[in-house]
Length: 79
Image: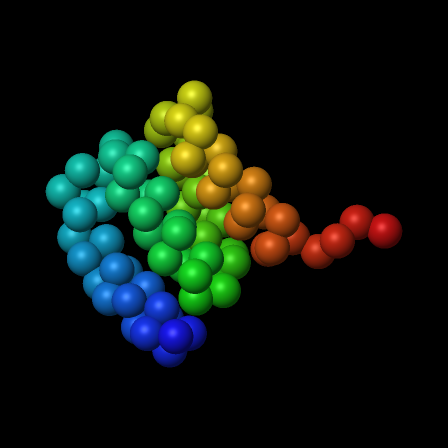
């Protein structure tokens, strides 16, 4: 259900700051946190973390996809 999905996403966010503090150069941590923010429709935070993941590992398809998804949702549509 949607409620369970949101709860799981919130739980996934809890350890992220500690993990990132331990290894601030891990694209995986930023990408995972970006995905959790996206699941909660917190698009600006998802976009920020996706940008960081791409800057750390620019050829990683998962990071690029996360960036595209977050940017599409976070940015206003062009007219």
